[in-house]
Image (cartoon, rainbow, N blue to C red; front, side):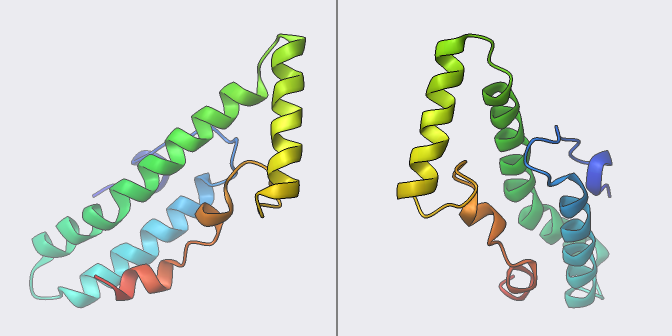
Length: 113
């Protein structure tokens, strides 16, 4: 099986490339431990756990990259105002709606399989 950047290379705009690899390794080890008698099932469980999260990470990183590289002054102003409002009103210190993403608990995810 693949994990980390080999499985889901992503742009650096949410700082999760290395983190995804660590989470992948943790979940893979947990699934092998839980399904020690059936490696095929362990790998399927690993993929079932990781594909939604890593897909989300890649898509969010791409979106942040596009947002951070706008060239129009109006688009930049809209971006800055949006980030400021989300920081102030959204309860997300990043201002990029990533709080729930950063609050992910890989240990809990491995337990709830």
